[in-house]
Image (cartoon, rainbow, N blue to C red; front, side):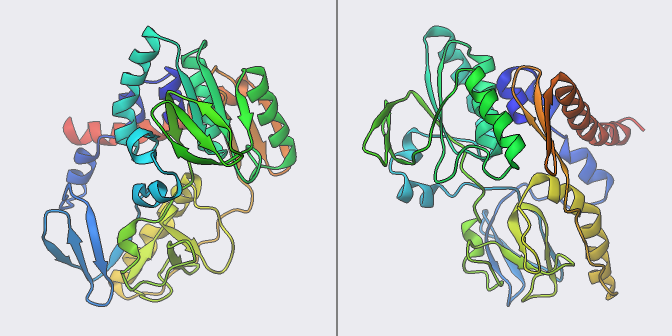
Length: 331
C-alpha cells in the first residue's frame, strides 16, 4: 500500500498494523530492538543494545533491506543524497517533507530501479505531483522485465501515457543535483529515489548459516535452514534451494501459515510439512490514479476494476489485523 500512500490515496495509518496489541494478546515477549549479529553454532543473537539472547529455535522473517554501505560502494553519493525506500518507516516519515518541497517548486525525480517497486513509485509520484519531472532508470533489463510479455506491454503503455521518462541505463553516482549514468550522461535530479531490489542484511554474512550467492538464507521445502535444522525462515530473507522462487511479499504471506506449523513442529520434535507455493499467482500493479494492471500467468488486463480489487485485498489484509488488535484493546 506504500505507493498508494505516496500517491495520496492512503494515510500512513491506513497502511499500518498496530503490533503491540497483537503481540500482547499472543503472550509474546517483545523486544523493540534490532539484531546485529547471529551465531548459528552457539545459537545466540546479539541485539543492538549490546545484550545477547540465546535461542533453541529461531524463525527469521525480516522484510527487504537496502544495504546502504554496499549501495554506497556501487553508487557513490547514494547515502548522502538518496531517498531510500527501505526501511518503509523511514521513507514514510520523509515523504511528507518531499511533498511539502513539491508544493513550493517543481521537482525532478529519478526513480532508480525497474522492478515492481520502482514502477509503482514512479506512477504514484506522477499522480501526487502532476507537474514534476519523473524519470525511471532501469538496468540491465527493461522496466517490468520479470513480468510476462503482455503485462510488460501494459506497463510500458502506462508509463508513456503518464509522461514518465524511461531510461535504460544504470546510475553510477549521485550528487546534490544530478544522477551520473553509465553512458556518461548526467540526469538533472532533485530527489533520487532508491528503489533497487531486496538485499540480505549484513549480519547474516558471518552467521554460520548456509547462504545463497546473494547472501540470503538457504532453506529447504519446509522453510528450514539447509545447514541448521533449528532455524526456519520465510519471505525476503531466504531462497528455496529446490526451486527458483522470487523473494516477494506475496510469497511471504502465503508461506506464513506453513511456517507457523513447521515452527511448532520443530519445537515439539515432530515431522515438518513441505510447503509448495502455487506456480501462478495474481499480481496487481497500481498505476497511482485509480487504475491497476492485473496479470495472471500469461494473461494481463488494465482497468479501474483491477485497482478496486487491489484496494479491497490490501484493506482487507490490514483490517484483519486491526480488528484483532481492537478486540484485544476492547474485549
